[in-house]
Structures are given as C-alpha cells and as structure tokens.
Image 1: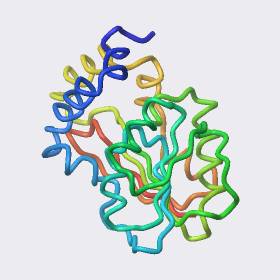
Image 2: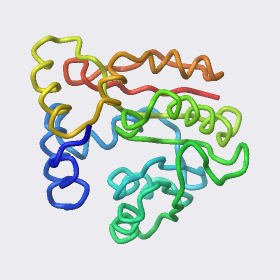
Image 3: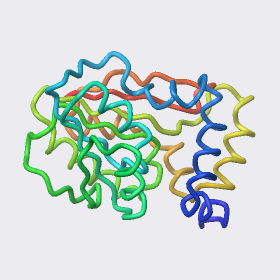
Length: 207
C-alpha cells in the first residue's frame, strides 16, 4: 500500500531529490551512490548502454559522460519528461521493463538503480529474462537495490524508510535471493557487494 509521502515524492521533483540525497548519505553522498553499480565496468564511447527504469535521469547523467550511445527506458511519461530536460544527450523510450521494444542482443550494458524492488515477483522474473534477451553475449547487467541489512543498527532506518516511501514489494525483495534469480535465468553472477550495513546490494551479472 503506497503512502501519501510516496505519492508526493513522485509528484514533486524537489522532494524526490531531497529524499534521494538523504538516503545516499549512508554510502558517501548521491554522486557516489549513483555510480556504485558502475564500478569496475568497462564502458567506452561506443558501448550501447540501457539505463533501465531510468526515472528522471539521475544515473543517466553519469552514463552519458562515458558513452555516446545511452538509452533511458521508463514507464512514466512524467519521469521521462524530466529525464529529457535533465540529460538531453541520451535517447529515451517509454515502455515497461518486462516488455522492452528492443531487438535481441542489442546492448553491452544494462543498468538499473533502486527499481527492481518496485516489482511483483512475476514481474521481476520477466524483467530479468528481458534483460538477458536484450544483452549481447558477454554483456553485463549491473544493478543496485535494497538488501536485508546485515548490521542490525541499520534495520530501524531501513524499516522507517520502507514504511514511509515504499510498498510491500520492497519488503518482498529483502527476502529475495536476487543473485539466485539471475543465475536461474542464465547469468554468470558475481557475489553481491553490500553497502550501508548490508542494506544495499550491488550485483553485476554477465550474459
């Protein structure tokens, strides 16, 4: 069940940005947070990169600095309008992540940031299969999302944040073996890297 704060955070850009900056302090600030899933990747100017569920382009902004072929995909027209204004160097597509209008084996890298927790379990599996389909052989799916804290000190903060701004799907993700789902779909998965007391996970999976 969505809260009014969640609704406001999507309606008002200033509120969403403020929440993002506050949450990102746990890993050293928003700039570092937006690049967590990009660490160690080989991306050059010719790499075809998909920023999946790109939102208002917060990570797209970093991706266009290293590749001239960045596409942002999101199902929200309002988010895409903001993304086009914020990061005009990327191209954008309005579509659902589980039904992407792209050819097979098109992208070198697919990135997504704190979006998979929005999905129901069936959606999540479909999205993972779609990402596998649109990646080139040897391509990488890289993501950052919530994880059940390994340090108990972080549980109260995570719980309050999820109660105020998220729905039951975020709680379900905390109980989900995301790396295991990726492996089941055929990905070669590197062990997740945990941040912020284990409350965030970064996974890089190779096709």
